[in-house]
Each structure stands twice: as C-alpha cells, then as structure tokens.
Image (cartoon, rainbow, N blue to C red):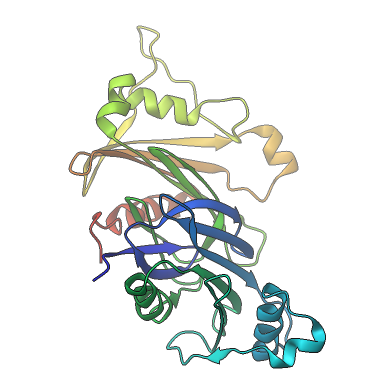
Length: 313
C-alpha cells in the first residue's frame, strides 16, 4: 500500500503519494500551475484556469486540450482514444492514456468555481499508479474562494478565510510564504500573507522573536510603515502580546505609507502583523493582514484557530 499525504493548493484538495513535493509553481488563482515531483523527476503536473465565457462546452474543450497535449493532428483528433470518468466534484473529467510516454492526462471542469483543471501524471509502478488514480484523481475536490480554503504542502498546514484567493507564493527551504488577495469585486483590496519559518529553534538562535518582528515590518519598499515608538532608553517600545492556541504572540499594526495612499488608494489603511512561536511543531508562524481595522483581529484569530497539526488526514 502506498503511503499518502494531503496536498491542498489554491482551492484544490487531494491526497498524493508521500514522495511527492512541490518543485515548481507559477501563476495565481485565475491561471496557474504547480508541479509535484519525487527525488528523481516530475511526477504530477497540475494546471488550472478560470473560464470567463458565459457559454462553455467543457467536453469539447477537454477533447481539444487532450489532443493538443498529445500532439495529435486535427485530422486525427476524432480517432484519439479517451475515457470519460464519473467524478463526485468535477462535472466533466476526461482522460487520455499515452502508453508510449507512460503518461496519463486528465482534463476536468468544476462548474462551481468555473475552473478548468488539467493534470498530467507520469507513471512509476503499478501500486503508485493505482493510488494516484483511486485516491488523488478520484477524490480530488475544489473549494471556491467564497469559502475557507485549506492549504497543505510540505509540513505546512493552514486554512485561509473565505473570500481570499491565491496571489502568489515563495517556497524556500525552511521559509515558506503564501500571499492572498481579496476575491470579491469592489474597490476595497484586503490582502493577507501566511508565512511558516522552521525549525524555529534555528531561526530564534539567529535573532529573538521581537527582532523577527522588526525585520518583517521595516523596509523602505514595504507599503506599510511602523510607527516609531521609543522608551526613555531610546530603545523601540515592546510589541503588544496576545494569547493564541499556540502560546503568546507578538502583534503590531502598521499604517499605509502616504505615497501608497495617493496612488494605490484601494489598499487598506492599516496592516496587522502577528508572530507566534509554535513550540510543539518548532516553527514561527507569521500572519500579515491588511483590512478594515474592525476585521483584523477576527482574520488573524481565524488563521491561528484553523491551523491544523502536521499529520492532518
């Protein structure tokens, strides 16, 4: 039996073999992709794109995409062999088995989020091939942006609040950040980022947690600026502390710089940064939220409350 692990990204939730890890990411919530690989080569390529047309023939689109991917001429497309798969989430799901390349290509359409999802699986062995087919593909689910979305990759697990969509990510060894934008229409543009730094023991040996906070909120290129507060000794005033499910956390609010208020007036005027040391899992969790002031506390509390343990299933 193949050991599986949860993988969730940009609203796509599935289980993948334990050996699979993200090796390349591109795009955003509207159009993007992420490749998963093992120690030797890419194994599962995942692509998605938002459908904006009112009328959309998902079956015809899937057939065209499979033919293009298989590099089949137009005159030969009708002879392309594909199977239609019954799926609990995807309204349409077609697959083409390319035995010559030992590759299975899937194209599906989720009617709720109106996203086309394409997957290319590079085969390995019979046990793993069955696991990908029966677990990864068959149980794939799609969460629209108007609902809370689970994120699970490497050892990182968290849930983003409803109405936030994927904007981008930076995945470095021991330091991983996911950036999110407001998904709904309107002039208001809330933003959020969730960062996991681990192992925390190593990070804190380099600098204490309050210095991690100062490093996070200071910089000329950042749109938000921290107020300069000093004690009588001319040292920066200590940050506010709050209680969280993982222990005490440092919190500070920063204000939008004047230049951004003039040219990017849709950005919220205040951003809250929260850093907590999750001692049980040896990591620093950094949450930054730019929103209306009355929503900052609830947004931050939601992410902390819905950050599951590493061994989520």
